[in-house]
Length: 77
Image (cartoon, rainbow, N blue to C red; front, top):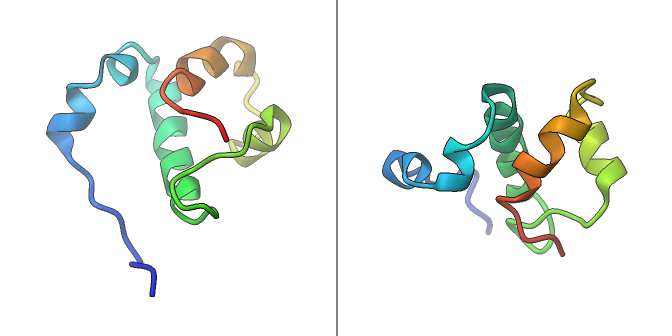
């Protein structure tokens, strides 16, 4: 059975240069994607589908600016 939660390590979050380089709204979207990825199959992955990810994030107006910041922290499958 899959755990209903994932562990969050503040020291790792604050020590990740890719996260620290993100705008604040990109950090929030990154956390949202972490929650979505937790439910994916395989677990902890995101699809290599820009349109789907954008829709999951509510079609942000600043997507083109934030996209590279957010996706730099992910390995797409």
